[in-house]
Every structure is written in structure tokens, then in C-alpha cells.
Length: 196
Image (tube, rainbow, N blue to C red; front, side):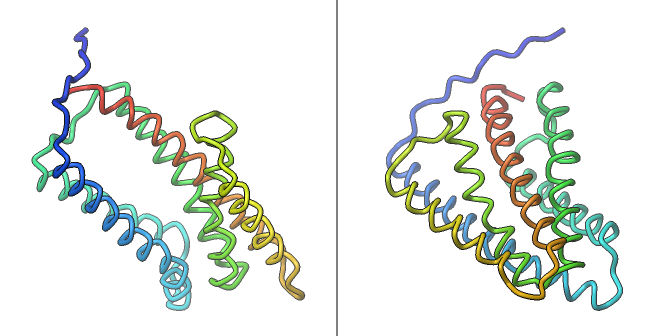
């Protein structure tokens, strides 16, 4: 059995740190746009006769191709520590797979706007879970934001004539993706300490 020693990286320069921060912000904005339009494209696909599982399969195939391409551009190997690889595979299959399935099922029972408003409460759940397990620090502004988020999500459930099935599925999906993000952060933090 081979052992891996932690990588000792040289300290980053201020310029490289700033460029990495800018790249991170731009990637986050791009991800937000892609994530934000997901419900709309999902509804359009349903209108054309698509069903949830094939739609998810196509989505994950495209995402996998993009990730492999990104690794190739960055000249990073695809292999990683076996223990971490197993954790990542389980996290993707059980964590994100479950969340994505719930999200697309919610779209079958509620309008895209309703599903999106509830599902995108996941930062609130991520923060609450992070606070509960002491991964996040408590601030007064966080309390205000969490309070407003809770009121906003709760108000959606008061819409008359709306079946609760779609909103509840969207809510469970939001909590599921929050758990996914927390676990992904922990696993990827471990992965950064290994050299491939």
C-alpha cells in the first residue's frame, strides 16, 4: 500500500491571489446563470416530451465532458487518491443525483418560478448546516439574511391553488444540495492535501 504525504505549497503572491479570486468570482457568476436557467430549460424539455431520468443522464454526460476538458486544459491528471475517488463518486451519485432528481420531479408538479424560488434557498440551508457543525461563523448580518430568506420561502407556500407536492420536493432538493455542498467542501479539502 502506498502512502501519500501532504503537499507543501509555496505561499501565493498577492497578484496570483487576486487573479484567482477574480477567476473564482467569474466562474461563480457563470455557474449562477447556468444554475438559474436550469428550471426554464427543464420545463422546455418537458414540453418537448423529455422525461426526468434521460434528461438527467444527458446533463451529467455533458457536465462530465466539460470537467474532463477542464482537467486537460489545466494539465491535471484525472486520477486521485482511491479513498477520495470513492467518496466523490458516492457523493455525486447519492448526493447530487438525488438532489437533481428531486428538482426535476418538482418541475413536474409546480411552475418553474415557484420551484426556482424555493430551490434557490439552498444558500440559507448551507449556511444553517455550516453554523450547526461550526464550519461557518455567526454574524448579525447573517441572522438578518436568514430571517428574510425564511420569510420569503414560507410565503411561497401560502400561494392559493398551488399543490404542495412541487414546493415540498423543491424544498427537499434545496436541503439535499446544501448537504452536498458541505460534504463536497470537506472531501475536496482532503483531496487538496494529496499529490496525484
